[in-house]
Image (cartoon, rainbow, N blue to C red):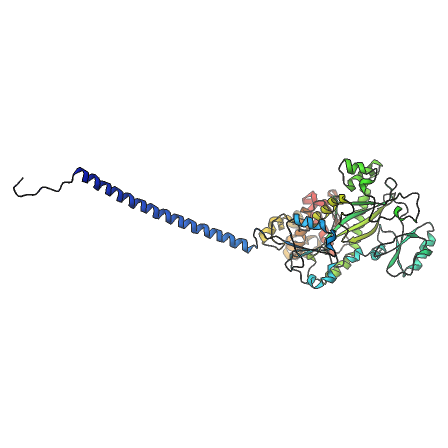
Length: 516
């Protein structure tokens, strides 16, 4: 080394280690900072995406009017509800998820014990499309006892309106001296067999009717039967009966020895003898679990008699009443914007004679649904209400906060046009010429010829069939599968009812469950 030169600045080993550690710490800090910035950016982006998705979900739910607490609203209306006569109606509605409210404008369903078209006429005139009411305008044309009794329809004992038909009654009684008569009015109270000269033949609003003198007896007791009947549409006409059970009511006293002074022998009152206390029916009901109808049918078969004869006649009698009264019902509903808001449940009461002929005595609007007298009737009444509400679409399987239509997709999920088109072979061959083919009667059920209203009627009939539960259609009359290949005789039907009957025949060919 030359004199005067300096040595290079070498670091000691300790200094080198310290410097290296500093560099590593700085590098690690930079990497950690970069990682934290990336992670923060990722989390922020994810949170924003989640918030956006949640907001979309909330907006969609709000658009559907849906939240955890929203439920459809039912208004149950009647006098003195605290007595409990509507308890079974409210029980069923609660179980179906309805909120019960009094006199709110946003209700979905009105159950009115009283006829609503007088007291709530303005409300009935302004119904929204989704609002449903448990009565039809004009249902009194069927449930008015005088009008029904003097209608001259099959299965109804002959009756004479007083005082207008007094002369005809006296002439009829003279020809039939053994016949007994009862006088009735719309309140249907105080019925008693009397001699003609003891009756008030001048009483306005009353009628005198033949008495069914040979009733079928079970263990010596006369009885009547109540068949719950549901009208879902007037034009076209669709009527069902609940076949899950039938109300049987027995007179408290045995019929023989007959004494017209003892009304408990032949008049069914509030304190009737129930099925489970009739000796021959009790074992079926109490021990083997059958309902009233099942117990009676089993007893009748044990007498070597066919219960189908009874029930076929019952269905025929109900069918004839509705076809006869339909023009009046159509006229009554024509004063309202739409008949599709309405349906009706009645109870048709019959007496059966010892030849198994049925005799229609009356039809009751808003029939009794209280089990206050007999707790065992709870099941019948709640099944009737549940099957009724299911049939008409108020007991819905699809959750919704309202009965209002939410989307076409939701409606089509339940019933679409493909589900209701019929006669594919015929339409594809004979009705291909477009609208010009629609003038042919045989093409009117083909899709190109159907109006929107007709498609809506068939979709509703399809849904009723799917939801019928324990109900059975009586109008249009079921067509047996072996006869479904040819049109039935429908000369007496209106064009709307003819089309609906033919549609059911076409559906029967597609799906045998539609045959009955």
